[in-house]
Image 1 (cartoon, helix red, strand yellow):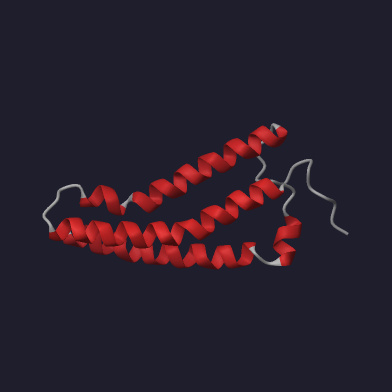
Image 2 (cartoon, rainbow, N blue to C red; image 1 turned 60 degrees about the horizontal axis):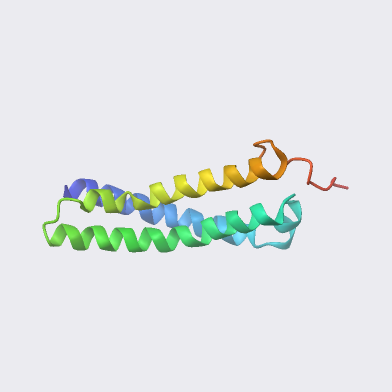
Amino acid sequence: MVMFLGAFSVFNVLLGWAAIRRAERLMSRDERAAWASPRLHAIAAFAAWSLPVICVFATGAAWSLEADARHWAPAVIVGPVLWLLAMGAFFAAVDFAEDGVLDLARGTLRKPRE
């Protein structure tokens, strides 16, 4: 159990770090201009900024549960992956609702590049 929690702790640290880097990139002026849909950009930014918080919370909670000999600590430490999947499904649903195509905000709303 400790090996599993240790491995997922490292994974959550790397996932949180990658999310922060992506969130910083999403906030740049050029990146905002490249998105066809401001709504999808906001969802992506929210997912990127919230994921590190979820990673820290889930990792701390899982280790606390492990110290208290709770058997559902592994389910808690996998929380960031579930959050990422849920946000991805939400992003895809909004993307499809906007233009009827799953194209990662690259559809008809996109402005032509000069």
